Image (cartoon, rainbow over the protein chains, first blue to last red):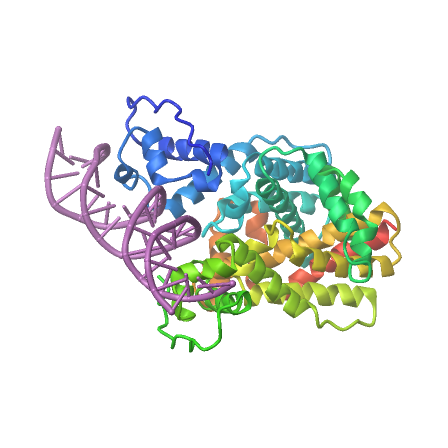
Length: 224
Length: 224
DNA sequence: ACCTGAACACCGTTCAAGT
DNA sequence: ACCTGAACACCGTTCAAGT
């Protein structure tokens, strides 16, 4: 369905390498989504044969894993230490949210990854800050797991809904339409959902996301 | 890869219907995972031609949506009211966790669904209990969103990791191996992750999951 | 060692032809 | 109205053949 932009095939000077392949794969993924990543399309963009790619990459699944790790590592690596643990956690959260928002195909990948380097990086970063908050013992593991699950869950969900509802369709318009749908639900069966339809229309994704983080942080504080 | 169990083709007595098709699709999905659901396999099981299915279902994507809604509705519908809102929330959470655990293919679907009936049902159920907790105003929307995101996030992640790591490979064994991997990480870069490796090995998924719910509930209570 | 591109075994989907 | 199954336009992956 996505129109395959003809885009001048890369000059075939440089030798093929996993790095170049992964780079081209990320471009394709960003431009056309997961279904745009095809060994044929990749070969065309790299001005080579589709079989050549297999010399540098085991298969498509591995290619996706490597691409995922590349994007996450690239973006997460240059985070500066923040003033407070609480602020640092919010920073990492927003950072993940934005990576997934900018590369919606990441969503589906983040869970997989036989050795999920990407997720481990997020886990470690959040973990240090939870330690800094003064959480002790087994509560550390629990708190970090909850935060990471929440962060990934919201990020993926956000990216997925953006992917399904047409390109950059007006967000406000989409929310208005969805809110209307909520208001028209059965009053008996969906009384709560109907009652918050207006909130749905007015809400800001990032604000809600951070409010959720604060809720968990408050819970962590309360159980300490 | 999954061996296609020959399984006697259904007697071709009953006429084809969306209901029968969806039923067979769910069976296929449960037995062989998402990649086992094929129009050819479906046609074989229903003892019909692959084209016939299109008379009752628009395409594969719609089939997955309908199957998802069917499973969620079926399981979520017969939940009894619980003694306290807090307990009711935990019940819904566990219920979702178990549905996704029993039907790992649900994970990928739950986010999508152009009109996500399945998610709305969960949203509504949690919403009522949050109201019952005495949360008021815009905090309702925020609290429910956070809970639902968390519940879905953990459930999907759990199902996905179970899917990736071979069938019913011994869970304890897998955790032990993963914990070892954590302990061997770079001491500088992954100090926190290393320090909780033992917890990873000993943790119970459901207990951790519920502990996370409690964390959010504590946060909701604290911000009230 | 690395690349080429035809070939193979699959898919989802369509559609003329049947009943 | 509903079903059949060959045909079409794709995939990922393999592999003999080239350099």
